[in-house]
Each structure stands twice: as structure tokens, then as C-alpha cells.
Amino acid sequence: MDNDISIESNSENLISDEAGDQQILKHCTSKVPIILNIRYKTQTFPIECDLYDTLKDLKEKIDKLTDVDPQVQKLVNKSITSVKHDDATTTLKDLNITDGQTLLLVGATRSDILSTTRGAVNSTDHKESTDDQVSTHKKEPLCKQTKHEKVLKAGKPDNAQIGIRNKNDPLPQSIDGLLMSMLNQSAKKARLTFKLELDELWINTAETTKKIPMTHIRNVVDEPIEGHDGYSIVGFQTGTTENSIIWIYWCPSQFVKSIRREILSDH
Image 1 (cartoon, rainbow, N blue to C red):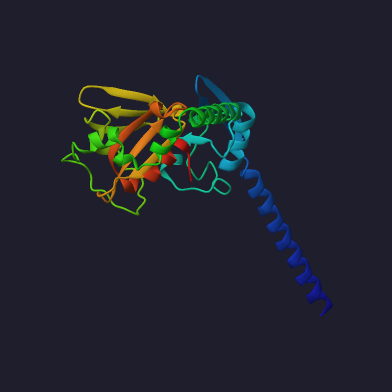
Image 2: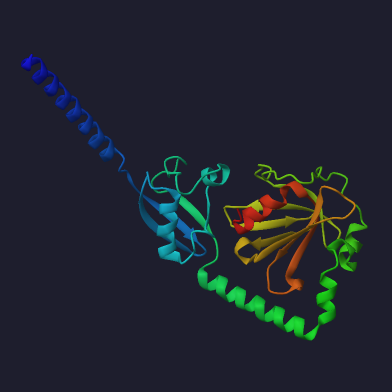
């Protein structure tokens, strides 16, 4: 009887040892060091990390090198931009990221954000103190303001995509262009194209292409067009005043949130 107990005890120890070995083996194989190249503006930063690091881990390392807060960081890569993910749990392996790969970093540094905020506050204070009538005028719906009303009177483009109110859709996946026909402030048909590899937003018309670095866009403003459910006016603000806003009209409302997220990394 004692022998039976002894044998069972030895068996349990053997199983325990084997399990321990498996845990150690698993721990060892999880370490896969890789080097990623993070391209930010004109610089490229090599970063040592592990294939099993999370996006949160990676962004914290990027923060130390670039001073770009993880909350405003947007990493451009085919896997990262096309898959919904949680930074805290999604690993680099989950996204099929490999050793030596280059990721494009989009986002303003803390000092740039602070400078922009101060400039916007100073500009706002000045305008409010010198021109109360302009402030009152801004409260009027965009579609009722003269400069916007004039463009809207040209009518919706014939081949404009159907607009849907109270819906949020991801941007259409396309290499050549990501959006539908719209009208810009010159009342010409225009198309938005997100050139992620260049970190630029392109506004194409039949005659010209306006290329805007995404890091130059400080804000995205939008407002539904009254009387035309499913369509919005969208503005890309590149400076601190209203005159710096580039306006696009007849944008299908279901894409507005995705446009903001793509440019500003909003969630």
C-alpha cells in the first residue's frame, strides 16, 4: 500500500517536472528580438523590440525617442491600419510585423501641440476682442453662410456617392482614391485621396491636385447640410484662423468620423 502511494507521488512529481519544462520552453520561445524602423518626418529611428511586444509597448518606446504621446501616435502600416486592435493586447506578431520592417509615424510632438494650442487661444482672444460681429456670424449654420451657400447652389455632383445619416462606415479601400465625387470651394468636382505612404491628403480636381501633409492639419470640422440628409460640409484646418480651412462639400456623412480618425487619430 505504501509502495502504491510512493509510486503515485513519484508520478505526480514527474508530471509536474514535465509541465515545468514545457512552461520554461514556452517562455524561451516567446523571445523573438526584432528591429523596426520608425520613420517620422525626415528622420528614421531604429527600435529594438520583441515580436511578442504589444502595440502599447512599441508606442512607449517611440515616445521616448520622438516625444510623440502614445495617445496621438498613428502608425501607418498595411496590417495596423486595416485591422481593429487593442493596443494593450495586440502583439506585433498578431499584425504579421516582421524584422526590419519600416512603419510610418504620424502625430504631433508635445511641444508642437502646446505651441498650436497657445496660438489658437491667442488668435481666438484677439478676434473676440476686436470683432464681435464675426463671432456672432460664425454661430450661423455653415450652409447658410454666403460663401458656402454659393457653392451649395451648384448642386450635388451627379455621380456623388449616396450619403447616409447617423451611420459610421470605414473609408472605402482603394489604392487610387478613397472618396467619391464632391465639390471644393471653387465649385469644382473633387476627390479625396489618402496617401498614407507619404503621410499626405490629396484633393484632386480635373485640373490640379492639392497635396496637404497630414501633420499640417490641426483640426477637422464638419456640419450636416440642412435639407440634404446624409451629406456634410467638411473642413481641413491647416492654420489658426478660419481662412486656413480648406472646405469640401457633399461629403457622405457616413465617412466623416473615419476621415477624422484617419487624419487626427481620433477614437
